Image (cartoon, rainbow, N blue to C red; front, side, top):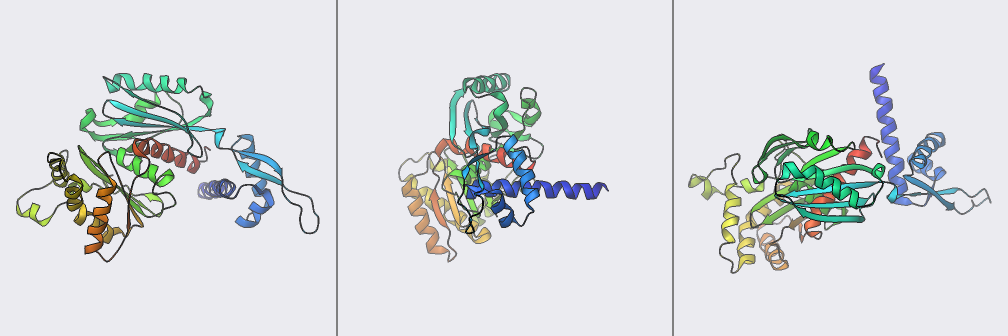
Length: 357
């Protein structure tokens, strides 16, 4: 009996998600059209829509055209993106990027600030930020938080973040003592990938790899079939650990908790200053080519404060010259907002999956 009830609940969640998605994507749309397109009964659709109307996630807006036979015009439904809001928090050492968006990703309020002691100041600063937005507290449905670390997203644990001195830190529980909506924790590069996939250069791309290049680190994230790939030990996309044969020959190996061999190579390039675009392109050519051969993504999106169009162009030419399998290589488009926006995207996805939206 328990298993049967579990299946019924799962079917209800799936149907609810399908109805909400079709309203968002094909609005304005009537109940009858939703039922026909999804193959659901009108009573099932009406029950779901009534719940969405009550929670104001959907609104009725006008009447559609009459039928060919002159039948009654149907009430049209639209998605209401301002019915709820999400909070994105991107922790970058002592700097924190905060963004609030509506359900469509429109930025409503944003503010960056610095802290001297992250653990002591984080909760109060978040509360101040939310209060400054002047949005009703009950309209916030989730918060996504990014950390420069390997993260156990399922349990909200920061496994190892040396830049902010957190190790095996239960960040979700820590933040939840102040806020009662869902808190989702993610790695910073994964968050930026989700942001670019939601609203940036990777929009409408179900197969992509995001690479972050800065003068203090290298990372990547993989999105396949529209879903972020975490890996068995939450370490998928650790491109900083990439090894060439010459590294092995020279006994250059990776050690957990230290910067990777490839990451250290890239960091040293920035000491040279001149021709940095060419040097970076040369360093990443084999890495990106192997990523393309292994994963066959539609796009490689590259972000970070040191990435230029010249680097992208040079890298594209280099990769095309050694690999017959092609992926489009593009510069990320959201800049420093990518991470916080991706944190919100992940939070919204969780909320919808759990039928909290």
